[in-house]
Amino acid sequence: MAKAAGISHRSVQRIWAAHGLKPHRIRTFKLSKDPKFAAKVQDIVGLYMDPPEHALVLSVDEKSQIQALDRTQRGFPMKPTRCQTMTHDYKRHGTTTLFAALNVLDGKVIGQCMSRHRHQEFLQFLDRINLETPPDLDLHLIVDNYATHKHANVRAWLAQHPRFHFHFTPTSASWLNAVEGFFAKLTNKRLRRGVFSGIVDLQEAINRFLSETNECPRPFAWTADADGIIERVRRGKAALAALG
Image 1 (cartoon, helix red, strand yellow):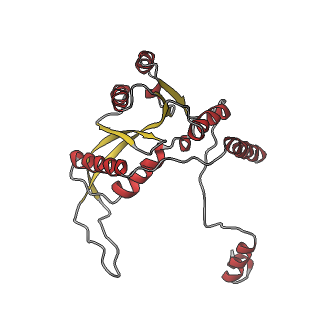
Image 2 (cartoon, one colour):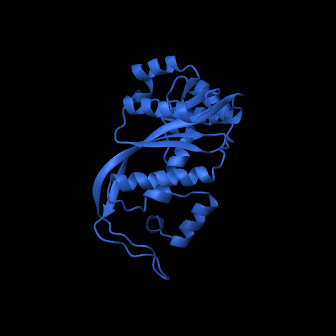
Image 3 (cartoon, rainbow, N blue to C red):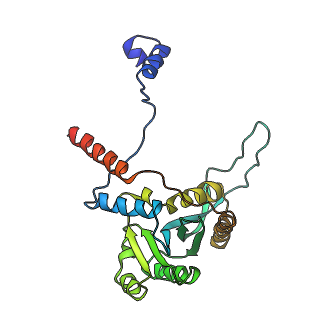
């Protein structure tokens, strides 16, 4: 731009700063097209901010295809003037899927690693939730629209366990599911720099992270107003429509 305008680089930077322009940055977004978006947002935000009495609110999802990656050579540890190093290439030793349920009231997580990601495994995880929660409390589970969660066998299981209530997030709105924050922490703090010689090694690391999380849990606190979210999405759709 400086070359095209015939001015200095610093002049271009001052003009950008004066007008709040940051052309070197980009942010991603996706607006939900769910026709029941507003109702679902109000339902889920209501569970976060005003949970029902005599009930637990659990944010449930699966982190699938977690790879057990081993580096081709040992890395060098961090030392003064040098950051930690690792090879750019790796060896794959298979994958695992983590099923997780975050209790938004106290921050504890029920987690289980499984080899596959089907409705059969999801039913096993529901059984585990049923066993590890007080039997006298209703359970409100926030889940996404993955086909596994709506399978006929899952619906039949729910009919036999009336204390379970599913609340589905709008399509393209996984950010409404609180457990996604736990998955991000797991990735950043345990998986991204991890070196795993096999599936067992990977699952042990995940289980240790679950134990450490539950030793010092932090309640999940939602602060965004549902009406504000709905209005921002409305403005986004209007802006897209204006672009043609």
